[in-house]
Length: 372
Image (cartoon, rainbow, N blue to C red):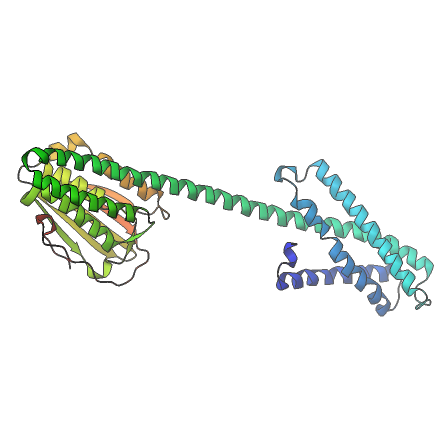
């Protein structure tokens, strides 16, 4: 469909644009040969209605052209040819109108006047067609620019989604490798704990598959996944692993990227519990600051062990996922203090609703803590 006729408003605007064109043509015809205004109206009015439809042929010429072919010599020749043919047909239509009106208005339409009018109509038709071509060309170029921008944006979004899926897919193998190592270490000395850990691992992986397939999850769901992970680790570490949760109740329904906290908690377990004989307490806090959500995971650590071990794949994965997210406004900051390691996340708040925060489960030492 011709885009200017796609809606009634556009059609009215297009018709309104032809009113000054019709008045200008009538004025020129009057200057060439003065005559009553009503005779000009019965000639110019129908002719402009016809030509308003005829000039839309430019759209169909431009529509099939590639962007690189616009304004080439071949393209300009096609426009010139179309202008000549269309203006000539318009002059023929004007002659037919004069032939129809001649026996009815013989005193107002002289043959010499007709010849002048037909020549004027032909020349005016050429100019109007070229004006229409210029306006349509600008319209087509703008449409092509918008389409190119849309395609580039779609390509960018597709690439970003593919990157996010690839990054999320790295989490399960990484965690599974560490968990299997833990199970292997328990099989010989504590088969019952190894069995419990296998059961917990199966439940945890089902949950990660469910949450990982979604673009956003609530903070409550993310925290629940963290608790299940800590329950698995509590089988291995027992009382050496404790967990403190400090989250305001009205933050539990905030939407966050899935599987964002688990790698941070896993990193804290690795450096704050596994590497220390006495174990340690992992502290997770969440607070709101305006339109931003601040998440912090801290753990005690051996400073030399952290310096030697680096930050690990989990933290790098989270950082890259934040950069590739839809908003791209999240940040991850590493804060090192004597005897303490903290990861600080800042996320824009989206989908904020009020809901009750889930309470920590007391079955395992890892779940000890408080929710505010």
